[in-house]
Amino acid sequence: MAKDARLTRVTHVLVHMAEHGGLAASDRIAEMLGTNPVVVRRMMGLLRNAGLVRSTAGARGGWQLTRELRDITLLEVHRALQSSVFAIDAGAMAASCKVERAANEAIAGALDTGRQAFENALANITLDDVRAATGL
Image 1 (cartoon, rainbow, N blue to C red):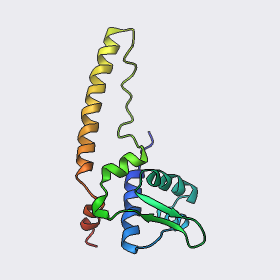
Image 2 (cartoon, rainbow, N blue to C red):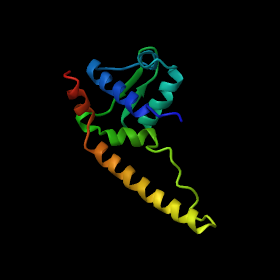
Image 3 (cartoon, one colour):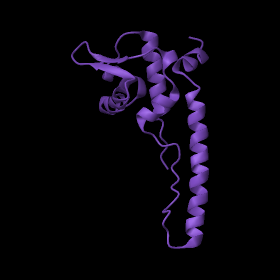
Image 4 (cartoon, helix red, strand yellow):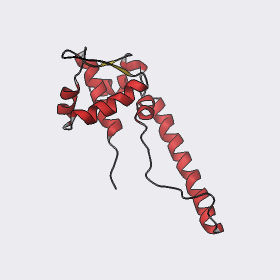
């Protein structure tokens, strides 16, 4: 099963962007992440839609944070990326079998509890906390 590393990778990029000030071009970010600039533009576009970054077109353009690191939580980044915490599917709640329906409801409840705990933790971590943990 493929894992989604976008939250970690984008957090890495955003902290570096703040440390280096100014604009970061998609090509430069792609080089940092070892990926294609198209992938970067897609991810950064999601962040732009959420109001976390803005873009400037042209040869001297790129991506720039819209707020200070202390004002952006990991939960905001997570939600902007529309990533899923769990790859488990609780199944159809309208299943015809009572056992399947009960199993689906139990698993859905556990998934909701886990998702909420994860999001609560992310809400209490800012990008500045991540930066501070590096000693920068």
